[in-house]
Image: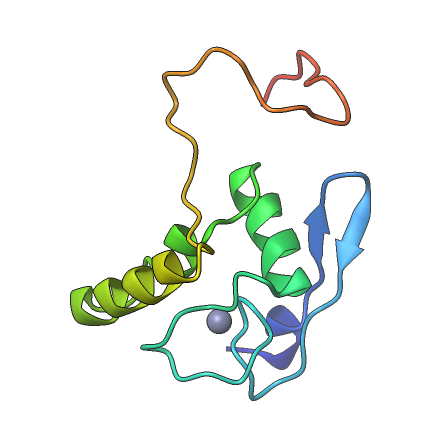
Length: 108
Ligand SMILES: [Zn+2]
């Protein structure tokens, strides 16, 4: 893998570019954690990168999704105890949370 490919900025909505984070840290959230540990859902880097990929803001459920079931259970429990647990809104709701701009009818 080339250095250039890894350090490519990520395009995020609003015409902004997310500059790559420094090497040696998690490339998803720019925090120094081992791959089996959760991403930092509070990290601005993680939030923007996630938004660019999924078109919604990340939740703690997303941040721990790659972890083992044991770690996910521990983190969910700990976060729930602090009242900090977040997860994606169920899709069945027709009322959408307030958005800055309406989604255009763009194809592709
Ligand atoms: Zn991470």
